[in-house]
Structures are given as structure tokens and as C-alpha cells.
Amino acid sequence: MTSRTQQLVDTLTARIREGVIRPGERLPTESELISAHGVSRTVVREAVARLKAAGLVETQHGRGSFVLALPSATGFDPAPARTRQEVLDLLDFRMGLETESAALAAARRTEAALAGLREALDAFAAAAGNPGAAVHADHLFHLRIALATGNRYYAGLLGSLGPAMIVVPRDRLDPGPAAFARIVAEHDDIHAAIERGDAEAARAAVRVHLANSRARLLRDSP
Image (cartoon, rainbow, N blue to C red):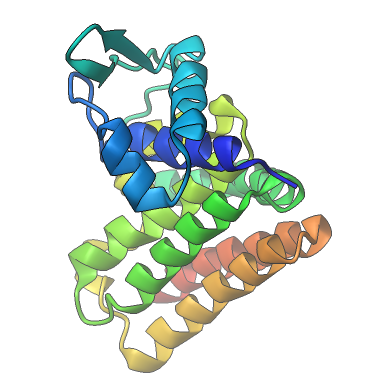
């Protein structure tokens, strides 16, 4: 079972890598973390020490702990997919990457990671009729799967792709209530498999979701 310290480390790491707490910004104070997460001062101090050891924060005496600029996890910096073929190629690439990411997430997920994934799924489901919010929530959901692996290369690569990896054409971002509900259900299947720790089901659910995304693109393209 994951310790309270590791749960707090996972939560803070996710917030840093997602840009919720940006480089140069101060972490919440010890008292704020104790109050927000219901943990002891010892847990908070050990979690901050682990973040320092990972190179994510530095502590300045009398001022608190501050987020450092994140080193690039990979040298991968793709240009956004623009042509129909590039979009299809990106989906093929994601298929290979994200099926394994989901399987690892199912094997390694923590309670904090599951809570973050649920939050992203709920935000996506609530974004019906708001295409911009849906794209960002969709990317966050996939990024949080990568973060749940505990492997910085998955998270770094999905983070570098950014929301542009959600490759729904701009003029078809609002697919209508029934179609959007089907996409939400696909995400829910992924979340459910990861939550119950079923690596094979998580891998299959991502494959189905991305294959369906590919089919939708081919169907809707002129």
C-alpha cells in the first residue's frame, strides 16, 4: 500500500509537471499542505525532501520551497500535426505509446493518481458543448495516465505533445451529445480498468479509444 508520504509526493509532482505550480512559484506552506491533505508535519517534510532529491524543488531558508525549471524529459519536440496524414500518423504513434502507458498506470497507480485521473475525466465529461475546455480536459486525462506510470519519460513525452495531440479537426470539435457521450464512455472504460489494476483491460481500452478516434477522423474527413 502506498504511504501517505508517497501519495503527497505523487500529487505535488503531478501539479508541478502539469504546470499548476509553475517554475519559480512557491509550494504551499507546511501548514497549508497539512490542512489540505490531512497529513502530519513529518509526512510533509519527507515529501518535500523527496521532491528536492528528484530535482523538482529547492528550499530557501526562511522563504519556503520553490519549483525549479523542469529539465526536458526528452529531446522530442514535434510540430503540430496539420495534414490529414500527419494526424493519422500521430494517432498511430499514440496507439503504441499510450496502450503501454495505460498498462503501466494500471499496475502502478496510487490513490492520488486515481483521484487526479477521476478529476480529469469528470472535467472532460462536464465539457460537453465547450470544445476548447474539452480538448484541454482530454489532454489532461491522457497526461495523468502517463503520470500514473511513475515513469518520467511517458509523462515528459505526453506533456511535450500538449493539447495539440487531441487531433479532432477544429470545425468538428463539437460532435453532438450522443457522439460526445460515446467518447466519454471510452474514457470511462480506460479509467475503470486502471482503477481496478487490470493492465490488459487498460491496454485494450486505450486501443479501442484511439482506434475509434482514427475511424471517426476517416469517416468525417472529405
